[in-house]
Image (cartoon, rainbow, N blue to C red; front, top):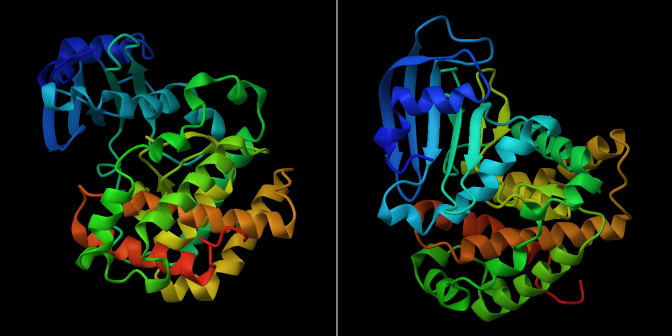
Length: 343
């Protein structure tokens, strides 16, 4: 596993990595492109091969990894995503990045994912501050239904340890202190007063996490499906990206969060019921029973709390994004009285 970006983009390492799937490939040269490096590093690049690239291997690629001492402690966060692309993504049929290499070093948790370059293919990554329409939300809910139905109570998924639920661990990081910091300043100004209580949100999430961990039926969930974790592919279709929180869990973790986070408050209030019915119809068409109307309503409220908590503890993101998502999710939680324990 490479320890630096230069090593990862070397013809020698790329030949070995890509050769694990494309056996005849030999990378002769690499043209680096834009690099975005925060905790993880995302680097776009183009390869030139000694002979025409094999079928299925685009020459415009993107590599994601964790390089340097500053990123070493964060490597475990990338492990589920790399394993998802390596072992599961293609089998689910969900629309996501096309992976040509993904692997993890078990000893160090170092991980690298190489995918087709979405931008070079005419795609566009999304921003929570930009528009996301009700029709687009219907399409992305279809993709969540595809993922959920394909993995619903699957015995192989149930025996896969890297998919074991870890919702409870989210309640062990930051917690009330981080929520107080957000709610107490301008970032939390749009959160309705009725739900602007850090301890109450924390306690509500702990209960939701326990319920999500023990829930049955379960499936594979994305875990964090807000608009920044979506892109439009070359055909303009919503697609899912960033799988760091992938795990087994109930469908509602994704759906309640997604509906509340991607849409404006007005669009969500107007279209929420129709969108949820659209998602449920897709599940049922795949032979999956999501439960009674009461189960569905209860689940959606808990999914909204899950998303509200995740953004309540978020500190290292553009404050404008956190502000918008806290307002949307907090308003949805307030509209549904989702923090009331008896509901």
